[in-house]
Every structure is written in structure tokens, then in C-alpha cells.
Amino acid sequence: MRIRLRFTKVGKIRFLGHRDLARCWERAIRRAELPMAYSEGFSPRPKLHYGLALPTGAESLAEYMDIDLATDIDIVGLDKLLSDGMPEGVDITGIAVVPSNALALQAVVDHCTWDFDLIGTDVDAVSAVAHRLMDRDDVPLTFERKGKQITENVRPALLSATTQPALREGAVVLTVDLATKPRSIRPSEFLTCLEQAGEVRRICRNEQWMTIDGTSLPPLVAGDPSQPVGERLAS
Image (cartoon, rainbow, N blue to C red):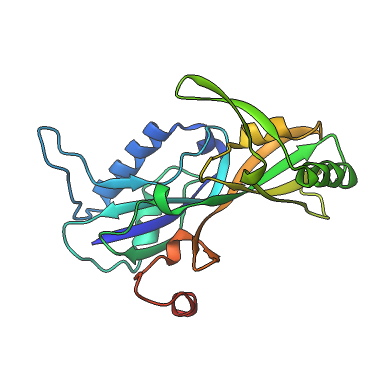
């Protein structure tokens, strides 16, 4: 049995790295006494499958992970049980059963929605900068992958950019959809493409998306791949 969790990472916990957070999950799962499935070999490890990496210091309202279990269980109430075992700022906001042979989260997620809270600017200025960026056909970016410097046109990875009309705690909120395939672009790299538009106070991943039959869906509704999309959304 495989279950998929959707959880937050907000507040001070955003400075905790991936490996430390993974250890927190392992402890919380042990406390909940889940029948974990383990890998084989000399050093068996619990079968936990994490989604796309989150930059340290960034917040998220939509992190995902899969847990393989040795036996079937009732997932009712499991969200609270696991949340209670995690540090403050990590709360499970959704849980579902997915097929044991479901594709990895990193394989199915093809774009993410991010919020950038900008201070020292105004809505009109940020909107103008975002529109100019999205109107461009070519956005060259030099970045490093596997120790090599690469320069590419990342405009195809910039899917949308909108500015919220209202301020949030004095900050202008720029909401951006960034592709993760075929070439991913990180939030910090996106900011280098953006003209000076104020100081970044907060970066938050709002959602991760997979595309099924031309429709963007969050990974939590993956469910049975043989079930039509409309039925999954309605259930």
C-alpha cells in the first residue's frame, strides 16, 4: 500500500534542510507505529519517496511525499497523528492512497506555482516588470548544473506571472508558474531574470502540478490511473 501526503513547511522550519526533515518524518512515522515497508540489503531503509526539492529558506504550502506500507491500513485520522509528531510549521493538509506502482512524484510534477513577496515597491511597478518579462521571446540565463555553466533561453519555463491587486502585510505578491520539465528553473534563477522589482521578503511554493489529458491537477488526486479525471475531481 502506498499513501501520498500533502504537507506544509512554513515558519522557522523553512530553514531546516531536506535530510534533517527526512529524519523528522522517520521519527514521526515510528511514533505513529505505521507498518513501514523497508528496502532490502545490509542497511534497510524505510521506503519514503520525496517530491521536488524545496530551496532551504523557502516556505511551502504544498510539499508531497509517498510512503510505502507493508500492509493496508485505514488512513482516517492519520493526517493528525503524523502532524502531531512533526515540528511546528509542518502540517499534513491532505492524504490519499495511490497505486503502489505510481510514477515517482519527481516524474509526474511538471510545473509549480510560487509566490514572491516583494517590499520596497508597488503593485504597478511589479506588474509592469512581470509583463515585460512575459512579453519577451528570449530570456537567456546562465546557471550551473552538475558543475557546468550552461546558458539557455528559459522563456519556455516561464509559464505565467501575475500580481495580486492587494498587498499582503505591506508586500506586493507576484505569483509565478515555473515549469520543471524539460528544463527546470529555480526560484532564485527566476529572480535573476526579473528586473529590479523590490526586495524579496518571502518565497513560498503554493502548489505543484501534474498534467493529465491537458488538465493541471495536484498530485494528491492521482488516485487510480484508470479512473477518469472528472470522476477523480468529483470524488
